Length: 280
Image 1: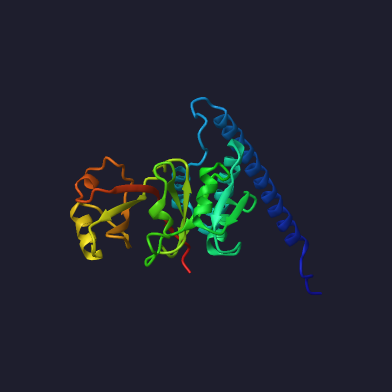
Image 2: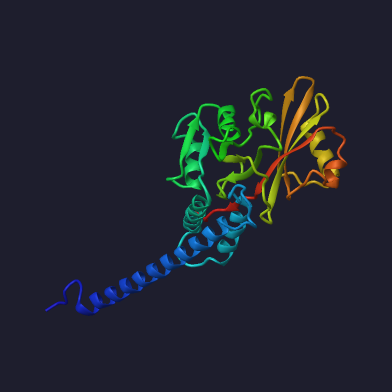
């Protein structure tokens, strides 16, 4: 008589594997509870102060470390999503956190990226304009604003980055962190300074001379020793606004910035450089 589809030895093996998974689930839960207890102690620590719990640079550094040691069949994207939820759970322990997203609709890319990054249960409100999303942060209605990555061809009068109220508000993160395309996504603006992750890019706004060309601005930046992965120009009356994404975590006192010929050199913030996603 042929064996049944699942013989007793096979059933016993499945039961043993499920028991092992249950034990691992308990161990993971124990570690999550221990981690939450440490976060709660951190939240109550006088050494930490009363500032925002948002630390996107540290989160990026943690994710890079985990991805560097990761192996096995679990996709890198899953690791990022699991730890993003852990980060947001820890943030919630340290205080309320809400998101203001500028998006044409609740299904737009910016709204989707905000939900994916900050978690589906983090309170989020979609706003019809970038100005309204930024106002929500300025007025204390939201912890962060999620805005589109600046694009070529924007008029300076309508570009949110040309009117950002720095240094009170600054760019602190770029979404998504795990990305196959470095040219799209969203930026996170918060009322806190960015924190370095170890591999960062700084957004700097320059006011160049009238009719400045892309080639001329690029050459000036390169001669100052600055590596610029992306650069866009926008005309503003008689001047040219240049928004440069510069490799490294720059400060206003950076000698390379001081060497530039333009009077206006405004750092809009910085963010962790995106990490390559899973291979297709």
